[in-house]
Image (cartoon, rainbow, N blue to C red; front, side, top):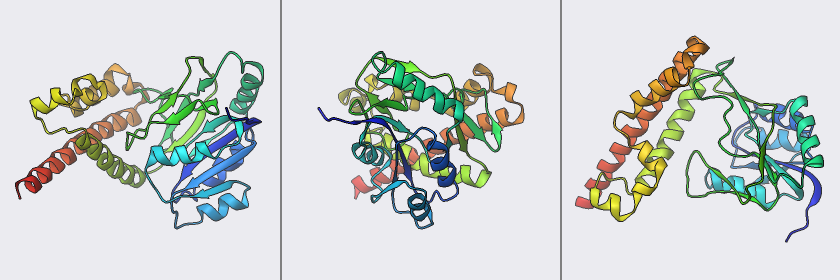
Length: 280
């Protein structure tokens, strides 16, 4: 088993993040013993800024989200790892809580969920299923966590331990600050998600459905529910109380439904292209 230094390695992945990387690095210095930025080929000043601020930069041609995260994780040298998107901001309250927990409860816990406060279009979105936004632990002991490289998007961190706690203070996530950024990211993510579904042999063929045992994949079933865009809107706006956020709650419910609709359309398109290719 590897021997790691006492302390915290902070890892982020970046691609043209010069607008966010300064606040990320400066705020995470509150807790980090090292900061690793894995850059996928930025053509702005991300790498230059990160190096000037003291981060260790690993330049690695973009292989996909999960694989890029794993590159950063494998290069850490400290006992604990904190992963964060380049648009995350660490608060003093969270930094103090992290240091207190890992130095006082390291025998009890191997990983921690950290609530994420999503700031969308300048507003904290509290409802609609966007808070506390804890899909996986972001703080974990070195050697116990890795990203599942089977997912092209919405990557998932796997923790080889059931000793997982949850912190009280939020990490700030300044995402989707304008409509243009949202549309750009949505176009990229829906393409990746549609291709991922296509790779699972989603051809609407019943024989393949059972042959590949896709019925065991709950995420696959959810992705292919009839009228999913409408269901997502109802889920976010009504069941998850998105209406309590006012206009932004309505906008995010609509945008979430549009995301699902575009993913479905792209999947249909890719299936058509695949059928035409197979016919030729």
